[in-house]
Image 1: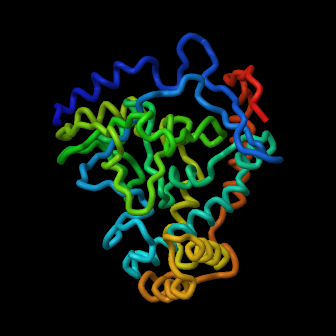
Image 2: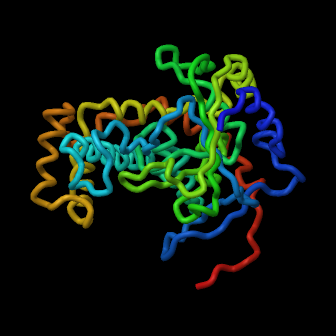
Length: 338
């Protein structure tokens, strides 16, 4: 189905409340317990879960793979069936997941969340900051999906601009159709996912998002005026993507020519242990492809990390952001079963 671009503005205006506000003065979030054992970290969930989620893309593709699998020569459900270059790309990208998650533990926001026993999905954050993962981004806000469907990020100027030609698309994801693999990033101290009302859909290797059960959507021809209006609503994108050192960190990792060997070792062991992975004697061959075809070497230390200035700024931001953090969180008056 194809609709005029101006319909996006009409649909965005129909959202029940402005982004970031909670109608009725009730708590937007409810703390619930998750996990088991000594950790038993708390997830801070939406008070009223959405039944509809949206994804906006400024281009239509016949297939939609998670970033972990994009640019593969062919997509398949088993690692052993991937082309050698794709196996090396998979190894690199999964190692980046581990690397980013480890570095994230140094961030003041992450340390504060741990001190409060709040669950933070580090891999979901990795996806949100640009590390290739098996997740697809979605939002419970149509208006936010419309922003990403009508605007594009220009690397040279580090700014957003409206799309003027081509086709965009908005997808409507039915929560109940894939509820076992869809998850909110939840209320946590990192502002980007929070401002984007972000959720993730986990896909398996070789799985196409467009085959999601009950997935609906519509295309539209780009109209610069619609993109300009979305930019105006979100202050040129800064409301959704405020400056954040974790984005710089993720970008530096993606372009790094060396990856700490500890993360390569971890992913190789994981591949060898999975029935749909690779036989142990073949796993080590990927390192040769990683070096010769992708130009990625191994190191004993991490050459990419937060700078001291970034951590100092993040510490100040953490103090401001976490003050009153629980003011909008309600108490769940139901004891969990043992």
